[in-house]
Image (cartoon, rainbow, N blue to C red; front, side, top):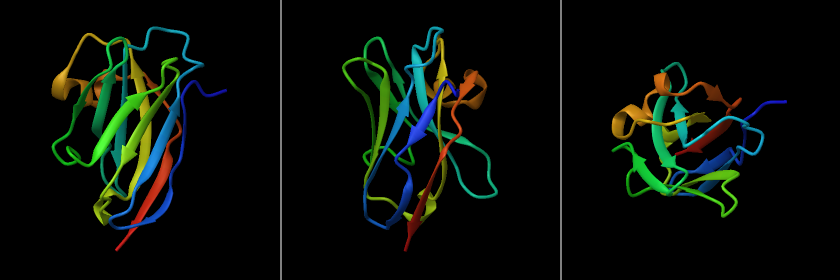
Length: 127
């Protein structure tokens, strides 16, 4: 069984909204950081949002600031990515990832920070 499981992707028209979910309940190790990454077709994976789960602090990439919101449920076993005002360039695979933490800011949006990854969920934004 995968330790991180994403869901909620699908097709959406530009300007629309989607909410992605990441189930982290099966992660047995410390997971103070949970982040969402976006991988456009043919491009590298890039971090878009991260949450420090003990306090709920959040940090975003400039490209999604004011459009995306990362949050967690009260039990801290599900991390959400609410995406609004979607654009065609938001198309791609979205992955959640977990790390024990110890970094923040742009470093917390780096793929190198994370050792646990989900399988991803596809988001397709049509013009």
